[in-house]
Amino acid sequence: MPRKAKRASGSLISAHLSGIRRALLEGEKRLAFLAFLDSSLRAKHGIYALYDTKGRLYYTGKASDLPKRLDQHLKDRHGERWNRMTLFQVAKTTNVAHLEGLVIAAARPPGNKQKPKIGQDLRRSLRRYLRRDADVQIDDAVYPERASPADVLARRITTRKLHAVSQARLAQVLGISQPRVSQLFRTNAIRRYIREAGKRDPVLLLLQKAKR
Image 1 (cartoon, rainbow, N blue to C red):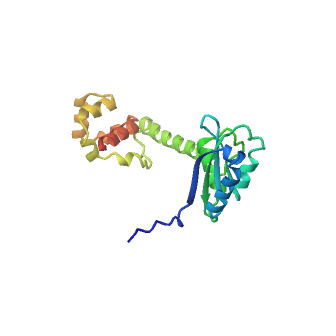
Image 2 (image 1 turned 60 degrees about the vertical axis):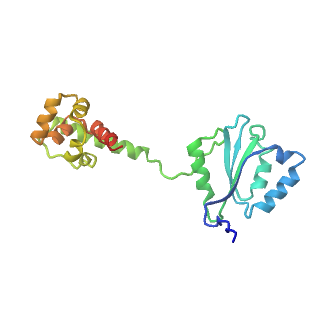
Image 3 (image 1 turned 180 degrees about the vertical axis):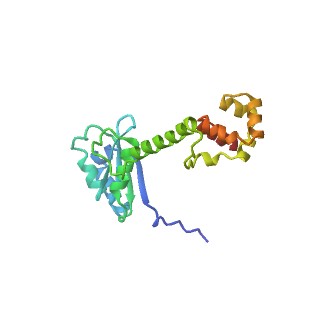
């Protein structure tokens, strides 16, 4: 029995048409092209991308009627800036504004001037987090007698993991001699030394590479 084709009904993007020349909207094949879109796109709801003559993404947008929106771009301010297009048909329940914003934020097409809708900008939160993390490491070095606050990343450095890497490599990362590393292991002080010397991050990188 012939195998049935898989249905894409549950997909976010149900169909696409990539790298089509603008000439199909303007030339003698215009009516045939529009008829194809009308018969092939079960829904005309989606997003589209316009490319310049060098194949670079120039503009992306959303539309409730893809053929009509592309027709408008033949004569608007973008009219002379593109010559290829890609269409993505998406489900009507999809928030196309969010999809459009994601593409704009990731690719930064020169033709898009509006601010994309991509939710909260977390850069300030990241800045505060990195500052707090740096303060914890500085305090460990300057005030070793104080009780160290919870350092989630430092907890990933365990004695077992440290034993899994060569002492020579660990000594190189810590900037001390191999006999000194051996001494720190014998006195069970290696993790404390890493913390107080501010070497947490390079040691974490060393351990990550050792896992590969």
